[in-house]
Length: 214
Image (tube, rainbow, N blue to C red; front, side, top):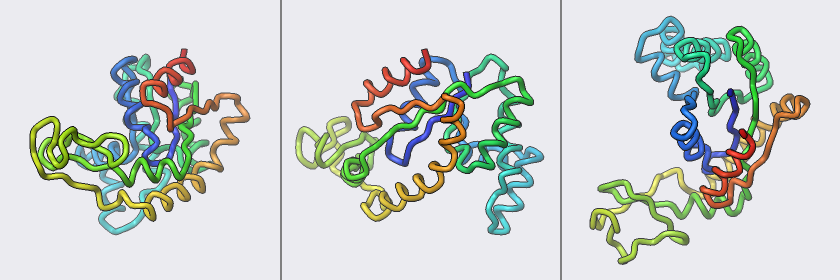
């Protein structure tokens, strides 16, 4: 089964993809990770990508398609795939069709994690982690049991990501809408788009996705 997970940063795509990998033995194909891996491995497409990146250019759809093709060729045909961060444009959506059909694969589902923008801003801007062990906390939803002390390791050092601020979150949301809106009609016309409440409890989201996949 091949699926696309859609949703803005902070919607929980990473968590749900990880759970699908663990529960169903699927493989998550994240374009950013694959690009870095292909460059590091020195594959033919990776070398092309490296040259473009070193010159300060944007990696073309053609190169990204090549990297996805390489990744799929390395998998067993029976292995289900989760596409994360791709496709982002109509051209990439059509390209993905070609990549899949050339390998006897089809796209089964496109699942969008829907979010409330204001609630997402609160979710992301309130996040912080223990600087020592990485345990996650939140100003509203999950404070340490003892103020200023990590529940897990007892450290008193905490940190926040510089980009976990309202302006950045709203900019990312706007970018997501602008990039993703054009590809949804392609898949809606095929009747394979499902939407899940990304603001729900993580376990409930997992159950909802499981029900869609069957």
